[in-house]
Amino acid sequence: MAVQIEGLAVTYYPIPKSGTSSVKYALMALGGKEAALSDPDNEVHGNLSTSWVDPFAPVYDGLGGKFTIVRDPLERLLSAYSSRITDADVLTRPSAKKEMLDGFGLPTDPDPDTFILNVEKYCACSWEIRFHVASPRCFVGSSLFLFEHVFRFEEMDKVRAFLSSVSGKSVSMPRLQAAKAKISPSALSPAALAKAMRFCRYDYGFLVDYYDPGKWGGIPEGDPGETSSLHVNGDPTVLRDGRLVYPRTLRNLIDFFARRPLEKRVGH
Image (cartoon, rainbow, N blue to C red):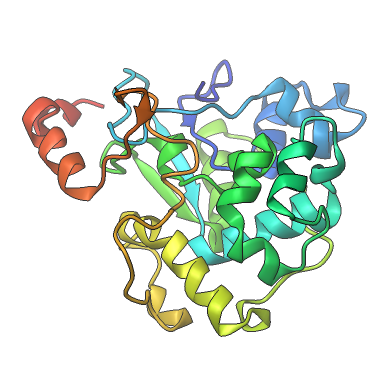
């Protein structure tokens, strides 16, 4: 569900690994509830959850003041590796599918290359991995037109200023859930970098006004059927012959104009 705080005319749509912990903490503070958190890094998400939405449809939920924060897709993917694998060691938790990991022959402590080259398999073995690397569209829908404010991850100072403005209060935004060790794209092998950029290809298309894949050498050519961040959670609305089908850009565009015309965004 979207995050709302009583008395604030804003609605926040969190995207994992895009400053969500810090923003949720700031929103809780504005609601006077941050003092109840003994471990803000982890407890903040239990109070203000991050929910899935249909990645192939705009979010028409009637809520106003929509804002979100987006991040460079490759850097977000590597941040997910750092926080979930290196820091949290989630593949050793009971929630991870150990038998599936063993079947794939995958280690629970992969280096960055091993993780990237097998990212779809790690997603199948751990809902926590899947949740943190899934496309931002899985959390904000297929259109950013409906959002009044879209901030870049590098602009957290603007987010703080925005919340201070709408609340009329001075907002503090401590940096929470920051990875202990940052992995640079330059640390990846050419094969892993190519796989990572192919995995993020639809996200760069979605965020074309915010991030340029050319910064990392561009998106290499490949098979349209390759796994992407949109594939990892599937399309729960479409089931054919017992298998999930993953609609792509053309179907999304046709669906958007055919059943959800742009006029509907007026007034939101």
